[in-house]
Amino acid sequence: MSTINYSEKIPNNVNLGEDRTLQRALEQWQPNFIQWWDDVGPDGSTNFDVYLRTAVSVDPNGWAQFDHVKMRDYRWGIFLNPGDAERKVHFGDHAGERAWQDVPGEHRANLRRIIVTQGDTEPASVEQQRHLGLTCPSQYDLRNLFQVNVEEGRHLWAMVYLLHKYFGRDGRDEADALLQRTSGDANNPRILGAFNEQTPDWLAFFMFTYFTDRDGKFQLSALAESAFDPLARTTKFMLTEEAHHMFVGESGVSRVVARTAQVMNELKTDDAAKIRAAGAIDLGTVQRYLNFHYSVTIDLFGADQSSNAATFYSSGLKGRYEEGKRGDDHVLKGQTYKVLEVQNGQLVEKDVPMLNALNEVLRDDFIKDSVAGVGRWNRVLEKAGIPTRLAVPHKAFNRQIGALAGIKMSPEGRVVSETEWAAKKNEWLPSADDFAFVASLMGRVVDPGKFAGWIAPPVMGINRQPVDFEYVRFG
Ligand code: BYC
Image (cartoon, rainbow, N blue to C red):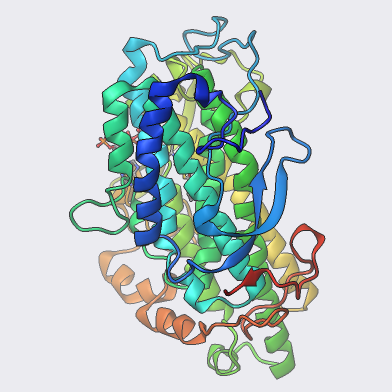
């Protein structure tokens, strides 16, 4: 079951050939997907041969094969982690019952909504990143961008398979709509806020893959607990791909910070203007990008109190991060959780029923994980003898979703007036000037082993290849 059949038009390990109707329906969706890739996928990349990894099996060891391929010919397919016939639902009102191999009628609408929301983010991110290849800082980075892009395409396939197989005509319509919404489109935008923002430059890309792909890690982990077994198995496999995306983000920002620290030491200055004049990105700009991507990403977890979240959990559709490792009753009735609320213009903590606060529980798990990586960036500064430190802003900073959307907050967590917000906004979030400066650095470096001046080279290459390997052949 874990071996992937590449002889079929749609590579898969779900015996697609045995279900002709489903196979035909997906084969009809496939050219629309390719059309979408051609229209809004990576700009100007059609003839490139890219050193990509492709899944060859879903076994934890050795699922990946590396080769130069054209992205259009990437073997997008449907790969589920191996099933366990004995698997039981392990949280919520159905705990102890057999995991579902089909969709129970009463949970159909909610499951469809979750799968569509998940599926919508995948093509959105490809659309957001489509112009970045034109300004890559190196071949190594270009290859990583393209790897992320093809895997997001595959994640779309993962959700489309579930929609087609388990949701009939509605599912097919939703699968079509996933190719019709467009990131940032005024009339038909993507579903969630962060996926309609722009990713205008590589600093934004690294922040996005560090923070926003980490939302992917936490949401997919919560779905990997689902009572609906096909969803759990497909998201488990997606998580193995997601790990590389977060690596691209974490190491990317780390290399930017390393280069900036080097320039600061060479010039013996922390003056942003001088650092910029030397072609590096000053730490103030890095911090403002961080503030932006962190705040729009924590919005992705939804409202702090949500009856949807309670229903999703109690009915077994979506668990918590690492549900199986938690020591409580996995039903959570009568338990409480602390959320922040605005009262008379100030933040106060309030105990609310935990079931309703599960979006906040997941957001808090995400926050802990994000902060750890920021600490690793700070160690780069520390080692270089630079006293400045990066930090995630307060949870209520720049929020648009949930109770905290009603308050203006400084990154340090001080409630501020509208007037102060307007005056300081450009110190806290990237300004037009910051974007213009970062854009001015975005050249296009494509000689093997060469890197743009604003980013340090990586410590090692991909798949034990040297850093100056020809990761992309431009055809
Ligand atoms: N922007 O009761 P609430 C990834 C809507 S990332 C705009 O809190 P709920 C990836 C919400 O839809 C992982 N709207 O909602 C990363 C609802 O609308 P309706 C993606 C928002 O259902 C990088 C209303 O506000 N996966 O994989 O509890 C690259 C009330 O909100 C936002 C998932 O998200 C927002 N930020 O929670 C590529 C998992 N937040 O119905 C890929 C599936 C909320 O009233 N999704 N709203 O019109 C879910 O589990 C839930 O839908 C959410 C929302 C957690 C997102």
